[in-house]
Length: 103
Image 1 (cartoon, one colour):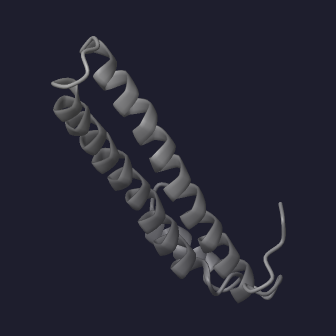
Image 2 (cartoon, rainbow, N blue to C red; image 1 turned 60 degrees about the vertical axis):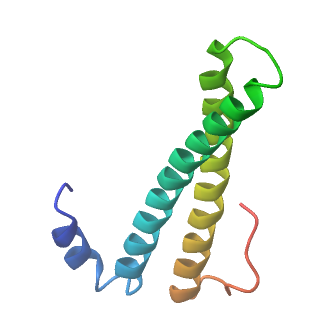
């Protein structure tokens, strides 16, 4: 299962939309990772700017930035993966992409 090309070849006949699904999921996960990194750096530097006006311990900068970036990364990844799943189900004719099932 470590060879993605072999996995795609195995699933191509049974599931015609599997290639697009794998690409969509890969983009979703990397988008979530990028949003985590950008969210962390944005919150960290914003706190550095605000810290000159409001005094609080510097140790909380990393904690607050990490928590905020985690929430942002989770939300972005969750929304994008759900849209990938809905698109794949539509390709597989399970249900329409316009009328998504609640899981």
